[in-house]
Length: 297
Length: 235
Image (cartoon, rainbow over all chains, first blue to last red; front, side, top):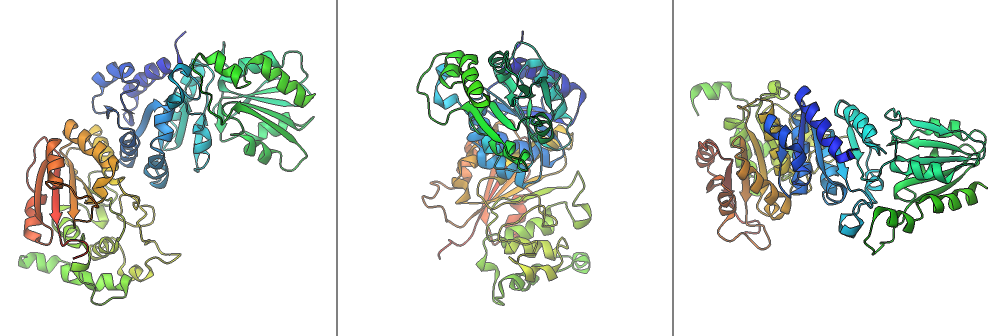
């Protein structure tokens, strides 16, 4: 199967052929995947070199002329490094863009901390208006990318990962899916955490919701799922607690409890593999089962 | 100025101190007190192809004020050229005023960008030039005004190097040099642009004829930077 990044390049190449508003801005990373697109559309596929402030500033300028820019690089360099550009060159100017990241929180553990960005979604939460998609499968990434490209002038973050579920779900942008029904609480699995959550909750009488879009947060779906018992476990592939406030807001009018699982704030100064890091963070199926069963009883 | 120009002209350069006084309350607030006034005036009066009536047209010229602090000269020029009602100048900085101490494009008619934090205008201008080119709009010029101390920001150097390499010939920078950069720029700012393949000119930033000649100099295949030197900040 292809990766989300490979699907992103292939689908965007197709989208560029059909939508003259679209443009792609790159900062060297991922540029190989856009060679065909750049040959076909040299004015709409721009590689600015290793210049991430310019990556976002140029995206803002493109949007000011009415284009729909798609900017792509690793999450660390897309969100964290040019953070003020995101705040000012996109949000403050009142223009939109599609930011597509790769590598996320733990995709390249051997690469170390410099290439880990578990705080990206939490950072975007400090700004208004962002749609945040966290697909768990290349097919979902394609659905969400096609939706984002056509979504007017909105601000969209599409978080691609090498960590994926075995099967795609029929995701609808902005909606949580009910994957399993139960009465003793709700587990919300975000993107690539779904497989581990399903394994961890096997045999437990709990509802499993699946989110491939986390912002806006589908509060109505969570409220409906929590009707029997308003105890909620969040399992997110980025900083633990990123969606905790959203869950509390959704259930503010009733007694409830929330357990937020995800990537810890502390640096793990270890290299290795994705499974090793998930285990170290308590995000593999065995650790999740302990945490979820302990909380939901 | 020709007779025809005088007949068709609205407020002139000599009206700008009066307009600025509406914001500052200082009747003697003359051109020497602001580093950008002459360059802004020559651009809006003689170079930029944009008017209040064409401010939404896709083929208009774009002027991006990157040096967003001290925007009184900018607001005065926008008022003189009919983008702003001069009456609104008196509200400068007020809670309900569209005119802040840094401009906001969503509040100020005619403002292409909101600015204040240094080093954002030139990257935005690069994207604007790319966007116009991608839409086949070869005529509109993109202008961005920066200050010599603003040139310290690394984001500007990302944009200068890329724009030179990409040959963005509809991109223009006017750099107001009042020697305010802490460490200065040895050999002058223009040398940095030239090294990245830009066309450059360095002129007296108070000389309207020299500014106009520099602003309108041909620069095929290359972006163009005009360094407008004015009195040092603390002279």
